[in-house]
Amino acid sequence: MAEPAAADLEALGAEMHALIAELYPLCRSLTGQGVRSTLGILEKVVPLQITEVPSGTAVLDWTVPKEWNIRGAWIQGPRGDRVLDFRDSSLHVVSYSVPVHRRLSLAELRPHLHSLPDRPDWIPYRTSYYEPTWGFCLSHRQLTELPDGEYEVFIDSTLEPGHLTYGEVVLAGQSEHEILISTHVCHPSLCDDNLSGIAVSVFLARYLAGLANRRHTFRFLYAPGTIGSIAWLSRHRDQVSRIRHGLTLTCLGDHHPFTYKKTLSGVTAIDRAVAHVLRQRGLPHQVIDFFPYGYDERQFNSPGFRLPVGSLMRGRHGQFPEYHTSADDLGFVSPSRLGESWSVLREVLELLDANRSFRSLEPWGEPQLGRRGLYRSVGGSDLPGIELAMLWVLCLADGEHSLLDVAERSHADFRVVRAAADALERHGLLEAVDAGGAGPKPSPR
Image (cartoon, rainbow, N blue to C red; front, top):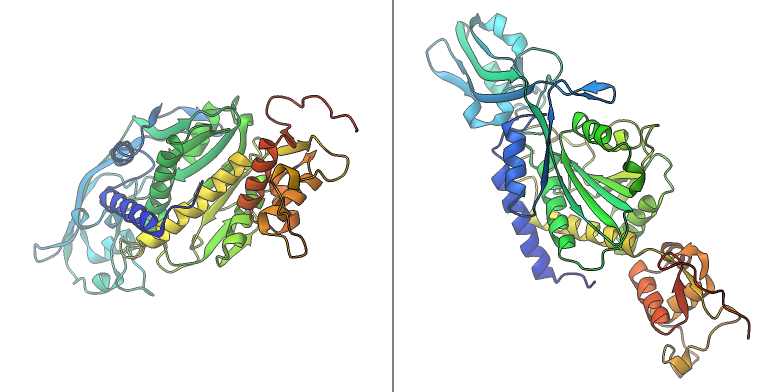
């Protein structure tokens, strides 16, 4: 499939940025209406299957928590003015804060106030999912300007039996073998982490839904971090063996170079595919080893599952100042970076779907390509890329080497190698060993 024109990619980036802008005001958390509303908006792009897991349900070693919802919150100062209001930013309230309505002195209130002294104009993002408490987040400049006196605090929230909600897009392919794309949907007004991952993912799903002849089944998962993927794994323990490749997506709209975090083994097809695409495109990037912290790749790579799931991001979590602050806003993510991330991932997924092994039907010596119209008639100069790729494909067409093996060994772009294999297959020189059986073994002539 040809790469979209620059204008088309720019328009797609703008469409993704507009989706982020629509999602930005919503207060998402592990559970609640914010997640449901988010998934409802995503359904405008591609249909979702929605699953609700009741509070109290045992999921692996965890239990689904009570559902949290918030209607409003504020702090009223000594002079009767509201010094902070949840309506101005969903970051202002510590996520999962219990309801509270009290009058406190400034000294009593301070332990419940969170700020960033080194970034005095930014609001931090804080959570307290599994410890019943409450709190507010505000800029440090605002905190230092609070006068002494009595304050009235109000958080109109509920923690009640309800559900954890996640959404899926499952695009059936010719095979039950799956490629999993997972993004977390539990963060409030943070654009890079992780509205960018959500937007790129859902537009990839829309694109792939329009393709015919998908070999793999593609599964896109939109779930709250940690507890969401654990709940999904708990409900799919008998099916996860179908997953052949996977990625978690986050922080894909910022200005940083790409970072790819490998699977636990570090040598799977997804590890090689992402590295190949980034390298062939000449994009600045780093590839880092797996470590058991970050996003839901750590759940998928856990000992009981050991699924080959890596993680693609730009800015690395916790490694850039805007991370988990109000500075991760609409201006921090750009349509061009979103479009580039979408394009890279599209190529990775198409590579994985097209990667297969072939057996040569003319393995005794090099087949004569010229009489088949596959080779130029005048020799003596360096081979064009696709012709050299044909020779590499034929050389490694032993039923054991994949097209990605060929691309890595020859240092050629996978897309060129794939085009070479397609041409050789059309001319009866190759047989795909993973499509329709091995077939008869060719006899020498």
